[in-house]
Image (cartoon, rainbow, N blue to C red):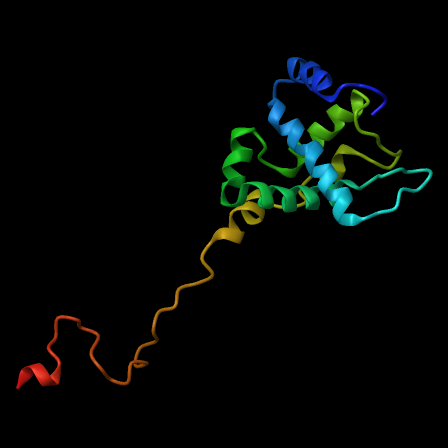
Length: 154
């Protein structure tokens, strides 16, 4: 990080680029730490602890679901994060200010269209399907709960 204070840099960024709130930057930083820990990549001399855009986005998804559960989509909406390219914008703002590093192969395009937010953050919490009885699966018995049993008819 080159001795730069993260919170001071984030303050500068959000003053100049008002698209995303401070919380989104802090989240991306924590998601990067989570991703590095999960990948357990040994740092190479030329790349350090580098992760690709796609690896980071997968880590972001995993970390977000752990942190926010079914509220993830709502939290991201509140932070004006609507597609994976929004994370690329945050990452490259942090690169521009010297907080994150990049290789010559890294590009904002690496963050475009990697996954759909609704699929990634809503679908894991949708019911898996209805368990309705198939017609005739009740052995011919009535399912009318107002109907009297044969014993009650006597």
